[in-house]
Structures are given as structure tokens and as C-alpha cells.
Image (cartoon, rainbow, N blue to C red; front, side, top):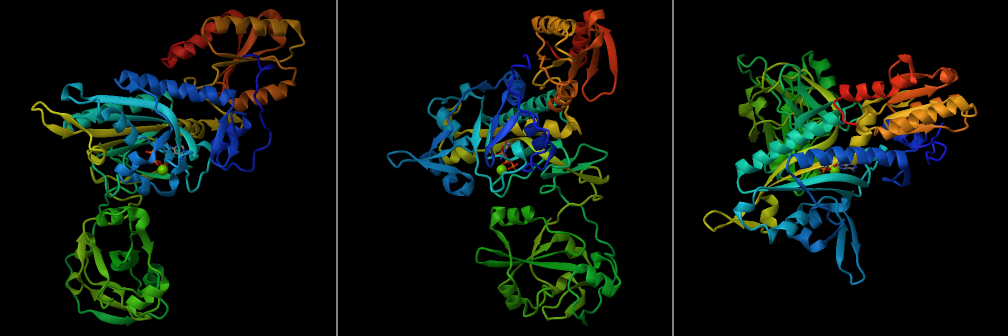
Length: 573
Ligand code: ATP
Ligand code: MG
């Protein structure tokens, strides 16, 4: 492509709407433009990258034996009602009516629609397993669309669905997708971790998330320094060792603690560590009031709490001040398990059972009780309600855990019969008996992957595209296109590389060299050839975006240099 003809509206200023590097750079490089909040248009350069990523995904899915289809974004309400998700999906679903007042949604995902597609025709165990996928636009009215392509309201997803006859088959399909995903993200040059995720209260099987590591990621990735354990912070199992388990139990005693409410204040007041206290956290879940007891030096993991109650997390509410006062008979800050209103349901993290002589709120303003032991309390023991923190022990090998942030670019999910139950989707087994399909679903966010690549690969001048997803492989900058020898050599190299299958941009614009270099760096084309003063000697400058080194080479060596870089990265031209 000749840049004199290209539509590439680059910006010098950083648009005020953008907070993170990928969003700023995509706008500045003229790759995307916002239509309305959370909805973007892709311009020529940006669209090329989308297609590159889609093709990597497509190749790896095809290689893994999945078959590509294309479904509509418009989906009838009735199918969603059969699985109960017309209601459960809530306000994230875009809904619309046709002229006959029939209701539809713009698909936020496609489980129902894929099952509907296959269920009347995939009838025999002999046709299983089946894996089908599409690369298609999804719609979600996100509560907080933000960060550009990272969390938008319209986005392209690769979604795949597997159908198996038994659990072993489902697990095999799952591992097959796992491997395909590793290939995809490696080919996109992402640094990622595969982490165990939480499938929620209704979860049926394993769930793994593919996290591109980045400080701007919304997810927390817990991982072990010494083994392969990795999980989301919601899922990570907490190993918590209780100290002083063998000391004698003492007589409990009320202590006057005027205006001392937080754990920090209490630690200072009693001159002891947080692990000597038990926190009482109060929640409302629909009609119920629930008190949760956890060690004083830890935080509650709300996901584990919601899973224990078998409810979605959004149904948890912190208890309001007025009700706290009513059930504890005290000001906020003095709640405890002893003497709290009898209707409060008490959940106790299993570690509290082992603690000795701890301190709790007295349900009396300005008082705490010390030397409390588990026999003084009654409630339900829950194995693990704690939130992980750095330095905790790895549940697999006992080494130390670390926590970093990550961007969820894809996930794989064992669904079991969850959806085939709802939609009554069956096949006939070897004995002619109807059996429910065992399903898996597998998503990759194409746009989010594009943004994640930029988050991991940019500098203060612009994007640094990995060769495999770059909109063009090579940019030839002609310093002064008014000079015939420069323009001619630029065009000669351009034609040669194009004829050999390389994707090339020729900057033949009548702009100052500074403008051209700034644009080249901003749009991040990986291989750069500069044609300047030495054109008459057949010499050009060759460099790699993001690396300092510049080399003068003969025009005859250009293709070999480019080819070598493709070979080094195992890429075909
Ligand atoms: P998140 O927790 O980030 O909301 P999700 O669990 O809702 O993600 P899925 O429904 O599993 O995501 O969708 C599969 C993939 O689609 C995600 O891994 C992500 O890459 C992408 N994705 C999901 N929501 C968005 C969005 N609003 N914008 C861009 N990509 C998205
Ligand atoms: Mg979501």
C-alpha cells in the first residue's frame, strides 16, 4: 500500500477519553474510532490486525478439528427462556422487538443457539464428538464499557462448542481446546498464564482462563514461583496456618475498648497481631442476615461466600447501618458472634475453629470480648472463605504465591449437561437410549486480544506489533520523494517485496521526514527500511521497530534480511 493513498488519520495529541496505552495508541495510530460509548469502528490498519488475529485463531481451531460456521447475532427470546437465561442475563443483554412484537436479543453468547442448531440432527453417538465454532460479533450492554477495545459493548468473539457423549470425552475435547489456545496466544506473542477460574455457584466442571499478564488487567492472577499452580484470586485456595493452637483456653472476659473499632485500632490497643482477632462481617442475602467469622488478619472472598450459599455474587449486599445496630444492639464496629440476634445465620471459616483465646466484638458499644474460643460460638463451619494474598503458601507445593494482574483474553469451560438439560438436547447411545450431551464452551475475545498485545508491546513512541499480527510487515520510508533516485529505489524495493508475498507500506508522502518517522513508530510496523541520501549507491537503512540497531545494507540484501526474520520466528511468508 502506498501511504500517499492510504486512509490513516493519525493523531499527535492523546485523546482525553483514553486512559490506557492500547486505547490511546489505537486512536492515535488511526486504527479505531469511537462511534458511541463502547462501540468502535475499525479503520484500514486496525482491521488488518483484527483479520490477522482471526486467521491465527481460525488456523488453530481448524487444526484442532473444530469446524467453522456462522450464526446470526439476532436470537429469539424463546430459546433463552428454555435455559432461564432470558432473565438471568439481566441488563447486560441488548433486547429488541420486531414489527409483530416478537422479542429477540442481540447475542451476548451462543450456547442456546448452537444447541438448537444441532439438537434435531445430531442424533447418534456415532456422530460424536463434535466441535463447532464461529468468529462473530457479540453484544453486551456492559455496566462500565471502558479501556477501548478491552471492555466494549460490541466485540468480535471466537466461540466454540463441543458435544460429547461422556465426561471423559468432554475432558478430552477440553484439553484439545486448551492446546489450541496455547498455540493461538503463543503465535500472537503474548506472555500469558493459564489459570484455574471459578465457574460460579452453578458451575459444573473445570474452567480455565487465559490471562495476558499486564498491570492494567482487571483480573488478579495468583501463581506459584516454583510449580505450575495458577488460579484467579476468586478461586485460589487459601492455606492459612493458625498460630498458638496448643495454648490453654482462658476464661473469656469483656474489655472496655472506647471508640476502638477497626482491626488496626484494636491491634494498637491490645498490642497484639491481627491474627489474634476474629472479624465478624455482616451481609444481607435476600431476606437473610448472615454473619461471617474469619481470622482478623484476612479478608473475605465474596465469590467463595456466594458459592457456599449457591447464589450469584450480585445477590450479596453489605448489611445497612440501621440493621447492624438492630441485630447487634450496638454502634457499628462492635459486632461479634456472642449475643448477636438469634435470627442471624453464622458462617465460620474453618481456621477459626483452631484459634485459641481470640478477641471479638461484644455486641455492646465500646466493648470487645477477649479469650473467646470456638466452644463459645455456634455456627456453620465453611472450609475456606478467605481471599488469597501474596506470600500465602501454594496449595500444590507449599512454596510462596505471587499475585499479578492479567487480561482475560480467552477461556475454556466444561459445561456438563447444564444446557442440554435446559434445552432437552439428547442423542441415542449404543443401546438406543436417549442421553444428554456433555458440552464445553470456549471463547476468545479477538478485539481484547488485539488490545492486550499492544499493552504488552509498545513504547513511548507507539505500538510495536509482533510480526505475526502486524498490519504490514515492512514500511519503506522515502525521506525525500522529490528526489528521483530515492523514490525509484523505494518503489523498486516495494515491488520486489510485494512480489515475494511480503506486506509492505511505502511512505511516499510529501511530508517532512520527522512526520514520517513519527507515524512509522506510532503505527508500529516491525521492519523498517529507510531510503535516503545513499539511494544513488543502492544503499538503504534497515532496522527493527523497538530495537536500537540500524544497519546500512545494499538493496540486494533487503529481501534476505526480511526473510531471515520470518524464519527466526517460524513464520511463513
Ligand atoms: P469478563 O469477565 O472480562 O467480563 P466474561 O467472563 O464475561 O469476561 P466470556 O463470556 O467468557 O467473558 O467471553 C469470552 C471472551 O470474550 C473473554 O475471555 C474476553 O476475551 C472476551 N470478552 C468478554 N466480554 C468482552 C467485552 N465486553 N469486550 C471485549 N471482549 C470481551
Ligand atoms: Mg463479562
